[in-house]
Image (cartoon, rainbow, N blue to C red; front, side, top):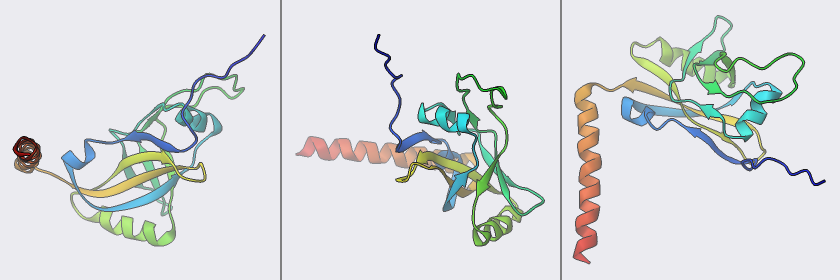
Length: 162
């Protein structure tokens, strides 16, 4: 009897991407942060079971940041402590200067810290690319759509001219 493993993602690579972030926010700065995860959560990430679309980061009273509202799917295992909560707040691992900067930015009105990408780095550690953004108004979103459509049309016209 041959036992084969489930197909899974490689140890490195993109797990989840927040494609709506650049449309809804003007991203000014980006930081790479580590995540404090349980073993089952890492296994779920290796299977690609994550959603960061609705996530946001908030400071805690102990000068740290928590990432809220990201979903890491449940891993089917025989864990004696039970499955993890899919939407629990998870601590971000940042250095002191980054935390001080982000607390200053977060205190400004309208600034939001949103996750952009969740991936495994070269060492196989789960990393979260977070961005500091300011929400776009409806007119800014329309301008973004117009610019994207113009670039698409321009590429099509140049392709036809060749």
